[in-house]
Image (cartoon, rainbow, N blue to C red; front, side, top):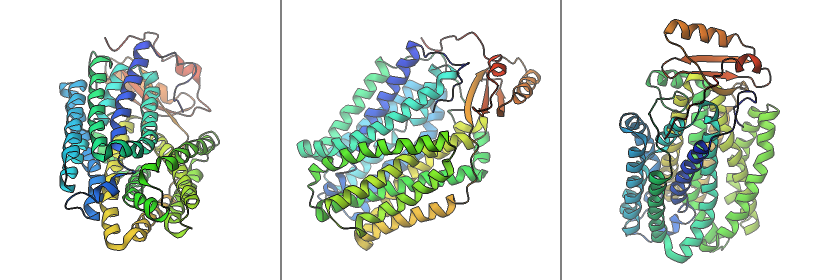
Length: 468
């Protein structure tokens, strides 16, 4: 849901719309390349020299480790040398990694290529560029557009991967991924606007001084564990799902798109009412706990239910519906729980946990598959979900607050302190932190009780463009 208030909102400018769509396009083409191999890689990996279940799982998950390792350093580098040079460098690594994987005939070569793909970690840099190019009141819209693009890329990748595998094989998919990376570079150079300045924004970037506070926040740590386990389960499952489909349901791997397409579309549609109830009726904790429980139970249906195609489809639909609900709910909870000026740092820790979950899921999933077979890999994933449920049961009911960034003018610390006190006194403002160096105030507001008239008085009439 957007965080803007009706009295403070206006339409996005053409430049801001161009920013949103072009950055989302970069995300789509890059993530599409990563997602397309999920439903087909295990069977391909079994044909590579030197393969083992562990190494196949490592090949699936290794990009998560390099993503987690390099996203913060590259984001920091972009503050110094500019966003676009870092994005282009990251995309270059992504293209090189795709070519290495495409040319490799050994599992180790593919692992190296996947690691290089992940080393092109540009998530934090893209978010920082989006913040540089947009006004405060539209920043959430831009981030939401980019976030939706990732979900679209996942759905398309799950369907397109098996289709391309039938035409050009997995090595061809890697070549296609390299081409998509080049396309993304073209979009970055020719379509994405050029920012006039590179500022550090607390709502999108990491703040070193806040990192310790974020790691001590138990509610945020529960959410970090949640996204870690969710990605662990997803990647671990895809170590064995292609084998399950091929050997237990006799669905050819190249026709698995016929199963994934209706499942992914229906899961998205079924997710919507749960998100509405969670947000509008303030039942987020209950929806979250229910979705975690369903995720674990659905995981077990893969191996303990009837091995018919219908049973597999029902299990996948239940799994991806719960997964979609959690994928939408968790970042919303991070934004609600994090203090006003620590949202960017909290999201950075959350994102790092997400990528580490991908790496650990692939590695442990492959190890479990090699040691205990398909049943062992699935039970390992379900056990991780049970651990998550036990931890999540202790979470507090979240405050239903929205983040808002308000332009302010403060010439010194004393004036900033006065502004902060005045804003804090407005009805409906739960938390406020004034960043005089950025010229903004970060707020957490209750949309149901906020005094829009009083808050609007602080909004500045001047909306200067931030890009050329």
